[in-house]
Length: 374
Picture 1: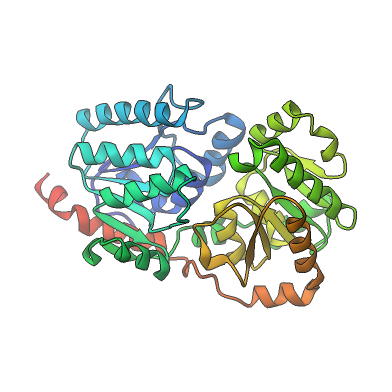
Picture 2: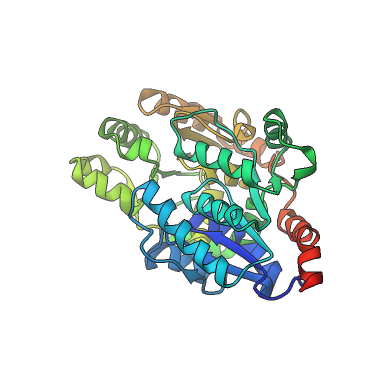
């Protein structure tokens, strides 16, 4: 579906790898109308650069001086740079996704210039004020002109906060089409598993990267200890984020990796392939909570709280670092192939895989007066 919008009329502001993944299909649908701006919140050739290539996205406009700064510095630097860009070349709309510092910067810059703001994945709430992301997402939702809620629960959260229903659209989550499009075919998945010496439904896939786990040596040690115990019975594959690896080495926790199958960071398709055939996933990622519902795999979430309750119960459960993690993992693994087949038959609560197309149509309607007058 070609976009009816003028070239470079929609500024898509992002700064992390999950945003690249979730916005890729919308950017493709918008085509020349999309002006992709990467704040550099998370950027390196090994991770973000690889994702850009794998997802087939155009080279973004990159901001400088943002990555590696504390939260306030990231937001302030990105906001100043975005304001200058929007002053020189005003877009008809700004799109942000999720709850990152990049998204908040884009929202504030749009608001400062009175540019219509679209928030994708609006209405997520953990009700945990210890999470910086919770503050970001609440602020963005207050500023947004169009709030694209992924689920009825997200819409209900927004209505409960007094946001006008006229500003809210139920779109589904763009992660569904991202998984459907980026999951490699069966032959490629089989070859990947063989390359890593894995068998379908015969291993656990784990990721650990959130500060609540990595910045607390006790929490990080507890997670790795429980994963090592599970690995005594079933291989545990751990693609190790560079930041997590640095914390492991700094805290002297490297011996806990000895029993795990530690991999370098994976491309998105490769990660999905391994996730599709894992007997269980263990993760502190928000995106993985969504992806497992599309792939039909069980998940143990190692976090204090979650903004995605829709995934809990059927597909996932929330645990603390330590013995609770091990107990939950073994209980899920004990369900065996019968449990996996049951999950594969469940529909994802995050939509039908058409969210990006819906959002593109809403964008065209939202900006119609602007490009009609241009």
